Image 1 (cartoon, helix red, strand yellow):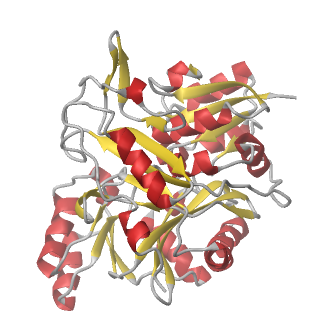
Image 2 (cartoon, one colour):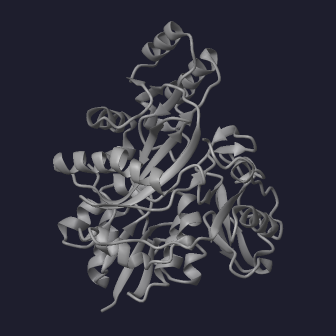
Length: 427
């Protein structure tokens, strides 16, 4: 018997989830809350905001939604899963308490310390003067992280002591991410390659997805400010199946067990941002949802029915589940508005979408429909994803199709997956 599905969120991640959900023979209808201009073309947009807990709960009851899939972290923090669970509705996404693993960096660090999960050393401060005194005493640079949710803009990576002091001022005094930085975490700087490992979790069991790499800096060569993500690729040669299994055993399983034992079982997608060194793996952060742009890169590679997997996780039945993946490689390039992640213009016409090659996926984030076609409506506008038999070919195909799309001020990184093609292994 089929079910109706509600995808919560409005970005390219949610467009990709909607696209994949529609391929499932289990789905009778797919709704989005609120969705975007592109999901409106393939599913049913509700217009409900992702954090409108009351409105979504009413909609789920009225439409008898069989499975709600929470996309953005803001909906997790708003307690959407809590409300739906109270109404005995199936929901893929953690409760507010379990979601603290993303909504509070300090909480996540404390949890990792208690469970022995490897992570860079850190100190937590809620007073900017005390934080700066500590940095002056240490006379070295630290990664400066807002404790709360900051839409990918709460992590600053200064080069030296002086820039670290300026970063503290930026977050805590200039309040560039608002109250998210009322408390900050100063983290030891470590070297290596970042890898994103996501897993489906049913409160106890962990089903790891394929690893991916994303690019957080705005400019080529990992320069410029941090963003919500400028693109990514999968698979990752430097992180094979054995590495994934070790990460499940040493990172994901201990965290899931600790949350279960604390009475806040985690059900949903658990994302671990890992730093891979020559001899070690450390956790930089956890997210309480699918990554963006990682979801756009991974979902086209998934051969198993997505809805069957999410339903198993939401209902506590992952123990016997498995996921099958294509051997083809995937590269995704985010097309952004000029000025992102700072100020940018919107309402700019997007041309060339109809010229993209068949089986190249264009997932929409910041776009809107107009009488003459799509126009820009956000900072990250589109993610162009290509599959091919090799990562080099997927990269070439992705950029070939990026060049078919145009809008005034369009910006994107030109070095995505280049390092993997040139130097795939770290050891």
